[in-house]
Image (cartoon, rainbow, N blue to C red; front, side, top):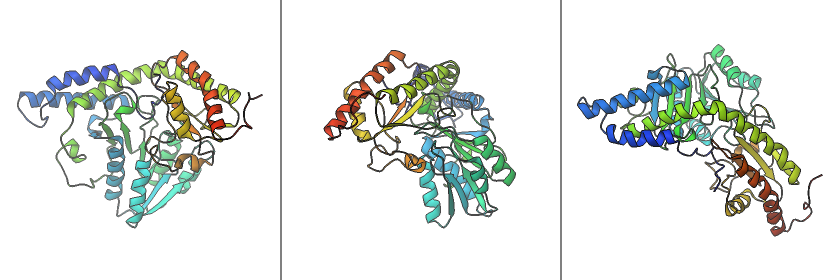
Length: 383
């Protein structure tokens, strides 16, 4: 069954599987212990930290491992806000951030902080000028994702980072959808990511705090992970995450353009075969593997179920809100159609023939669902 939901999770990379099995043999012990098995585990942990730092372009001691991308975001934001309380209690976020960012912002506001939410255009892109204008003398932290998880639009992080640097405000970048796929922007102070997005195992998040960034743990201190993340490190999973990132980022240099061409083909083909459909997201400044479109007169969940019956696994809306009945906050912020939404995100090595089969069955699937809903005025082939 073709799997087209890499934005939720990339299938486990063979390099990760191999490293995971090997590390279960040699890296199961406590890396804080001085006996032989502990030293072997510590060596694997240090090697993984250095390998990931090399791909991301940072120092190994700036890298900490969490249990998820969400935990990385929460610790990153809360730690920065905690360290800069004397500066002020003002936070900037974009309207299309991942829910993990917005949930921290909501809690911060409930606790007396002030939050400025910067809107986006119809493509889901933040204006760098508006983001810069939101900075204030009491701004403790600004947050801007590298690329949107629902529509693939790449954000102007370099420009936002320059403005934050001039204002002496740290910028946290949620790079979950970008790490390993595309070159990372520069100028940020804190970066977060999640290993299962690049083919690593689930349960490994990445928290990078650059030297010179004020950050203080919001939790009781623990000796693990540079006193940033408490708890016993999952050395086998971390080792597998590092192996996957090295392999995946190397492959993306060649496979990314191929996937981007497949997405371009979908962008042009779908409106030619389905009436009343809206392709959303920036057509140029976007992730190479992701396409989102919305069909009028039919629910996204119904399309997903029908496509699953036909043998295709895609998603609707955000992976973190797909089990709720709420419209996507990203699509609402963009001012586009929020229902009948489908997100197709191609994993590495996607077969072009599978995508052609998907494009062949999609129009009839939408037509059947519209008929079952009593809508017949959109039947036919677009001119």
